[in-house]
Length: 113
Image (cartoon, rainbow, N blue to C red; front, top):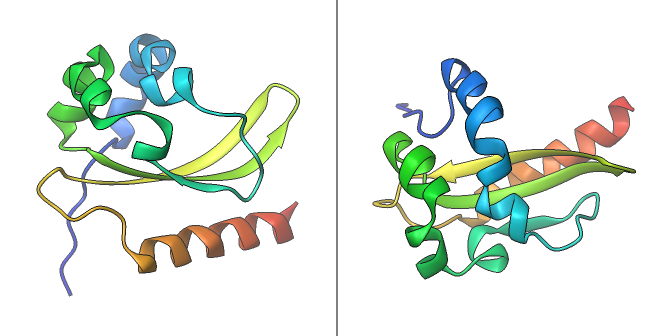
């Protein structure tokens, strides 16, 4: 079995939170988050808008992160906890197995609270 890591790694987190969090086009255009909701990038923002965005070109593209699947684990007052799965642009968009993994993550997080 072989795996490849794409997207945000641990060393990228300080840059994300200090520079890109406020510019994240997904966060700025997201609908109201609902706990347990699984949503894809195109459901949040048009692909053309993503490709034109500073966030994609400055942060996501250099990390080969394009397709997004976001699972909202918890939404309480001003706190949104989520897990985002990303794939490179060269890969297919999210697959059924990704949605199953995201659903399992939500169920596990619900049990742990």
